[in-house]
Image (cartoon, rainbow over all chains, first blue to last red; front, side, top):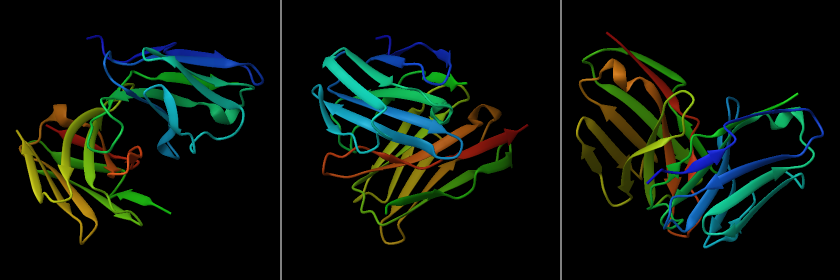
Length: 115
Length: 112
């Protein structure tokens, strides 16, 4: 298996622009997670899907952030409009089940820079 | 609110020594505790999982302990090697189906 795939790997954009990050989870995994990592705040959960349904989106910072999972093999995280404070590395992870007893498999991340 | 603290941001040790990393938590009752390794520019990679009713778990040179009374997990790497240099993250999970909560990590540097 190719593992979790994320695109793009790097994104540089200007404040106010729309940014869309993409994720393909490992085939057969039914839980998908979006995280944001910064030096200051560490790895923070943004949203968690189980069987394509959002279960916990309490980590989504504000209405500028939205996430979708139209099918079991694809998810997007959109930021509109983007702001400099959104600059971070965004990780997608998948697992077989969303509970704490399941290991998560992380993608390589998308490094987002908002100028 | 829930809080996870990993003992220090950085730990420097000599090759061959045992590295011990600490993960403390408050306001949480985890059923599971996981440890991940993260190399620069890459996503975290799962290492070990320990359940609340397990005191200790081992995998090759790795050992994890879990003390629910002290609210603490210790992560040991014996006979450390420069290749063990990375950031190590602890994460807490519970039975209720909510997602993991990650600590900020400890960066380990093993010098030869």
